[in-house]
Length: 322
Image (tube, rainbow, N blue to C red; front, side):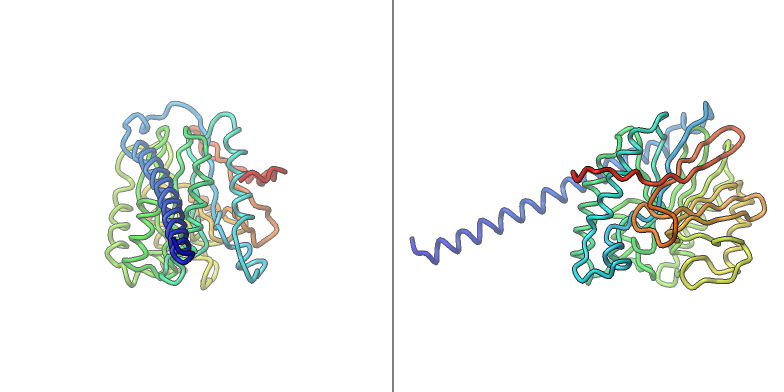
């Protein structure tokens, strides 16, 4: 056999090897998504979860955003997301050790940094594979719930980017129950720029119209972009809050439906305040923070009287095994 034929066979074998490796990664990713969606479906449909029994905790985080630190903060010419992988891995180890065991862990948007656009597809797929690889180490008894952020669906969502998000993370607005408490997940990008997907905004608003149905001990909302950072009457920010006119309308609608707590992310700093008797909490990043708050997550305690919460920094381990 000639040297040229040997080279061709070697190249072909390498091609098959890398193709199989990629297929295996995506099969693993698909299994992770199936498990995540299955656990969430149980919380949506199990009638026992609509009954109050006892106090419990859950974990709220935001913006693990694989790829942000190198790209945006460090301006690295060859960015990667090793730093975010390390922070998420350490956060998961920390959460897995908590007692009592949290009932769920919700990430309020921007799981990945690369946008779901054609020019960033390959980069986003690599980030997605690593996200699933790392987050599958979460204790299987702690369901993971993902909220859609602007990097997950694009600053200007389209039919294509919404479909990509749902293929990668599941539904982007829904209601679920845990321990007698009703939880609402919203896609805040439909409030920022719904022009290309008006039908999705309409469906989300229809869901919101049903929120008051059925008794709940408490009603809690999650989304990515905060309605406001400090005060509900603050001026519009082109990026970090919801426009003032729509903000006040939505806050009043949520309040009328029984919501008294709203948890968000996006700001990469801790912030928040009150609209009447509704508390809005803005949680800094699991990944790269942009202010003085370290990377971390929030432990939320739920009692009959209400919700309290504490921001906990990620305990950075010396381990490099990620």
